[in-house]
Length: 106
Image (cartoon, rainbow, N blue to C red; front, side, top):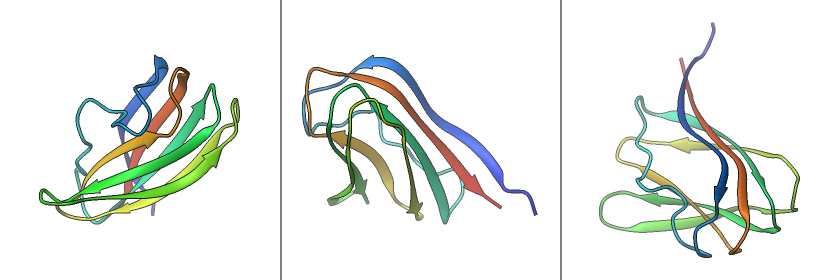
C-alpha cells in the first residue's frame, strides 16, 4: 500500500523568528487523523528544535533535537484529532535554510 502525502509546509531561506517563539504564522492542522508529520529541517545556526502541541486549551512543548548548523535533520511526529502543531527554535538571528512538513497517511 502506498501512503498518501500532503505538503503542509515548505520554507526556504526565511529569517528565524525570535528564540522560543512559533516559527509558523499559523498552526498546522492535520487533514487526516491519526497521521504522521514528517519534518525535514536545516538551520544556519545551532540550537534546540522543538514541537508545540496545542489542543485548543493547553500547549505542550517537546524537544525534537539539538541541531548543528548546516546539518539536515529528519523527524516524525504522531498527530491526533484536535492537535494544532507549530515549531520553535532556541536561537535567534539565523536563517531557516529549509523546513518541510509532509503529512503522511494511508
